[in-house]
Amino acid sequence: MEKVELINKLNLILAQEFEVDAAKIKPEANIKETLMLNSLDAIDMIAVIEYEFGVKIPAGEYAHIKIFSQLYDYMQTALKN
Amino acid sequence: MGIYSCIGKNLDEVRESLYNGKSGIVFDPERKEMGFRSALTAYLEKPDLKGVLSRNQRVYMPEQAMYAYVATAEALKNAKIDQDYLDRNVVGLMYGNDSSADPVVKAVDTMRAKKDTTLVGSGAIFQSMNSTVTMNLSCIFKLRGINLTVSGACASGSHAIGLGALLISNGLQDMVVCGGAQEVNPFSIGSFDGISAFSTRESDPTKASRPFDRDRDGLVPGGGAATVIIEEYEHAVKRGAPILAEILSYGFSSNGDHISTPNVAGPTASLEMAIKLAGIDINEIGYINAHATSTPVGDAQEAKAIYNVFGDRRIEVTSTKSQTGHEMWMAGASEVIYSMLMMKNEFIAANINFENPDEDSAKLLIPDKRIEKKFNTFLSNSFGFGGTNATLIVRNIN
Image (cartoon, chains in turn green, cyan):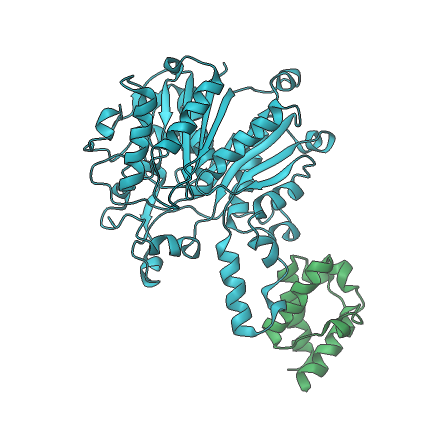
C-alpha cells in the first residue's frame, strides 16, 4: 500500500470510529487530543487498526506513538514486514 | 415515568396502544434459521443515540442500556428534573436487569476466532455485566446516590421499585430513579426457548401471547425499558413536582420450591404482605395487573393465588403481556407504568386473546375488551424463576 493511500485510509477509519472531523487529523497533530481518546478508547484504536490492517500494535510500541506521523510511519513499516 | 417498549417509544404511544389493544409481537425469521423452537418475539427498534450521547458514552451501552436511557430521559423530563437538579442533589438509581447475553456471546465469539482479547474492544466488559444499566445511567446522568442493579429474574423491575421505595421510606434517599430493562435479541433467550417455554403459535404472532386463555401454549419474549422516578412525598411537594401516585406497599416472598414451576403459596404470601402493609381495605383495589405470562402452569397458579386473596370480589384482572409479551427483567417496572397509564386515563386495557377461560381463570374477572373505568388503586404482580415474588400496590394522586 502506498503511503498516501495508507494515510487516507487510516484517517478515514479513525475519523469514523471516533466521530471526529477527518480534516483535523494532521501529521503533526496529537493523536489523543485529536481523537479525544481516554485510556479505554486507545484499546479501540488498536483494535480497529488490527481489524482493518491486520497489524497489531503492541502496548510497548503504542506508548511511543504520540502524533499521527509516527503512527503512519509505524504502520508503513509494519505493513512492509 | 418514561418507557421504551414494543407497543410504543414513549408514554403517549404506549397509552394509545394499550387503549387500542395493539400487539407488539412479530415472527422473527432469523430465530428460525438459528434453530429456535419458536421465532416469536416482541419487536422494537434500537434507539439511535448518535448525536444524543457521545461515542464515549455509547460504546459502553448494550441495547437494554440504550432503552433504559431513553426511558429515563423521558421520566426525568416528565418529573421536571434537569441535569442541573441532578448535579445539585443526591439522587439514587435502582434498576432491574438480569442478563446481558448479547455482548458476552459476541466477545466470546471474537476471542475464539481471533485469539486476541484486545479485539473485543473497550466496551465489552461494561456491556457484559449484569449491572450494565445502572453503571451506564449513573455515569450519563451523574447520579450520586444508591447505584445498584436488582437481579430478581422476571420480578427484577418490581423489586427495584419496591426496594427504592423502602430506601425512601427509611429516610435514606429523597429520590430514586427506578426501573427495569430487558435486552431483545436471540442470544439472550435461546436457552429459554430450549426449555420449551415459548408459544409456538407462529402462524398468528399477535394471538400467541394469551394469558389466562384456555389455549395458551407458552410465553413470548419481549423487552425494552421502563423508568419511574420515586420521591419522598414532602420532598416532591416542596420542589413542585408533578406527583402522579403513591407507592402504598411492596410485598415479597420466595416460593422455596421448584426453580421454574411456580406454586400458589408463594405468590399468595406476596399478595397478602402487600395488602397488609398498604393498610387499605382490599375493596379499594380497583385493578390487578397480573404477572400472567401465558404459560399453562404459571397463569393457573397465579389465578389461584389471586382468588385465594380476593375471593369472589369482582375486581378486573388483566395481563398486559397479552400485548407486549413477557418483558422479563423490565416487566415489573413497565407494568406499573401500563397500570398507571390506565389509572390516569380511566380505562382498563383488554386482556387481548382471552377467548376461553380455564377452570382457574374462570373465577376471575378478566375483560377481553377494553373497559372504561375510573379506579384509584391498583396492584401489580411480578414473579420470577427461583420462586421470587413481588407485589406493588399504588394509589392515584390527583
